[in-house]
Image 1 (spheres, rainbow over the protein chains, first blue to last red):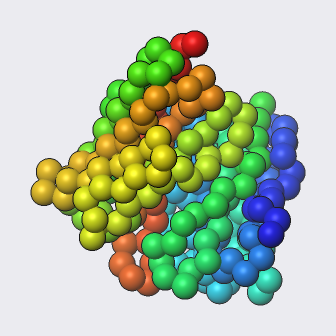
Image 2 (image 1 turned 90 degrees about the horizontal axis):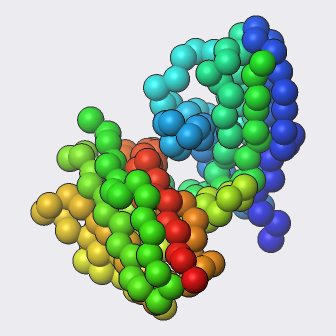
Image 3 (image 1 turned 30 degrees about the vertical axis):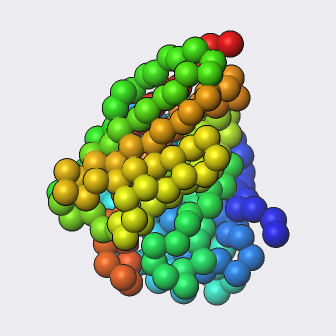
Length: 114
Length: 114
């Protein structure tokens, strides 16, 4: 099976702009989680989607949002970008037969906000 | 609260030596504790995980131990090789049977010197 894919891989934006990142899970996986990775804060949970519903959300401002489509592909959106949003954004998919399933990560989208 | 502390932040060993990384978690973590390895510029990859119905799990040169009473779990790598050099993250699952999230430790940069 193909692994988790994310597009685009690299992105440069300026403050105030918005950005949309995409994640395609492993075929058959129905849960997608998003994480922000920065050198200072490590891997931080953003939100998790299952069957097009957001089931869980981390402690990020409302500028961070997401959605999931019927084919389990997911997008996350960041509006009104700030310099501090520069990070590697990782998504991970899991089968979700049970909640505590192994999460498989994508390669990430590296976002630079100037 | 939901918190995972990981130590040490950096670890340097000679090839062939053992490496141990320790994590502690706060009260509300449930029973799933994975470890991920992230090589420079690559995605985090699961190397081993443990569920709270067992105290130890081993996979070749890698083992994980879990002490539920003390709320800590550790990664043990024996006979280290240069290709083991990477950042290692522990994580704990917080949530219920229907939803939850992985909370990650801050990471340990392991350097194996040839």
